[in-house]
Image (cartoon, rainbow, N blue to C red; front, side, top):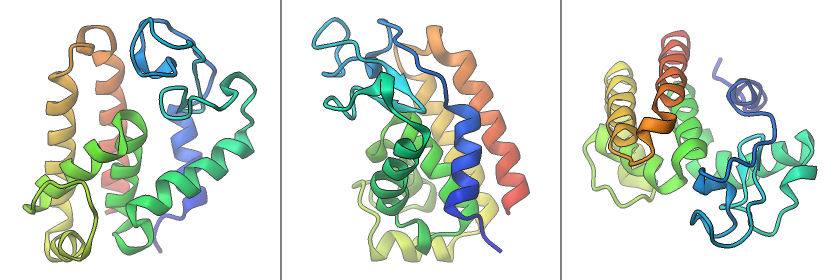
Length: 173
């Protein structure tokens, strides 16, 4: 049986959780630009950059769950992709943005990196070896993260997160 949204959400909250308003993290700013807009923070992985009008500090776990289902899980066509791949893409989307995660998945299966999960991408995923997709995707994830200017500050934590994702990939395949 594949990983359900409920199971995926429980895992995700293992990575995401407490409120943070680190002013050096652009995700905590309503504009996504450090020092511009309001530093409203991030809670349960829901950031002010993505949801500038949301009261992040008072966000409940149930509210976060509803947002993740509606705006993240459903938007990556989760019900049409092998659950081992879905969890990897979903976690990366939450950590680095939906478009980035979708493009790295497309790169892993050798289709145009347009950030749209359509029929061609879904077919390429289905036609690809599951383990190859998981390994390539996480490789592209690390390469992307290590190219960011914020790598010196957050790279250790991102590396640990990807290492945990690789463990989940092994369990889920």
